Image 1: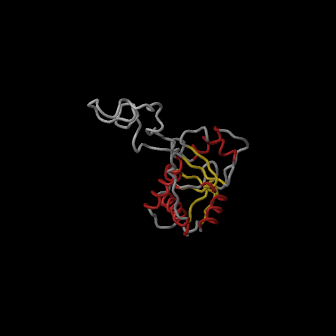
Image 2: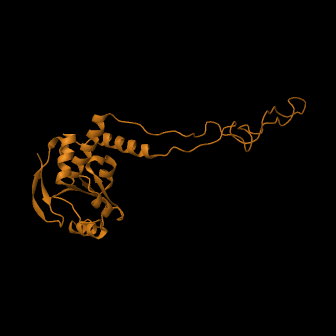
Image 3: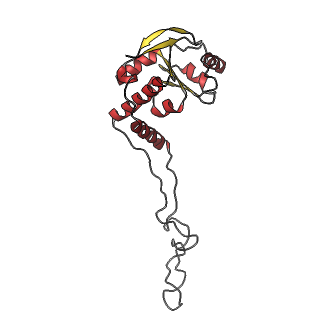
Length: 207
């Protein structure tokens, strides 16, 4: 099991913790991580784009000219797709882009992302992150102690609303509960801060 340092909120090392190999020491599967990111981004697409077919375009109910005898091509409606101002053929219609991955694949993708961040030294375990009240200043002070004030940082807690509110006004910084852990956030951020309590919950679910 890999041993990593545990830090306090000021950035000083207070001890060590053993991480579960089944979660933080798996072989990195880049293809699965990519698929998980695509799945997450696809599910966020609104899919509300729409074009009008000839049946939806206003007007065109009257036959422009008689069928025969004019020397012109037959025409039944001015809203035909070949007319200017007509309908669109096979245009985009409202749809859902969401797709799903098997549960084992999703979990392996998250474990791959965690293992990758740990191997790169970008995952740090913090004893606990607690603020008395939501204050952006307190979050900036904590990040400064880890020399991460200028980096994109992800804070993973057991579900502390005060910490989440303290982080949401800082560009590039995001705080989430361990239950909302996802591959996109892990790969997007440069530094990952995980509390000891969140580590226990993550290992409980993924191990």
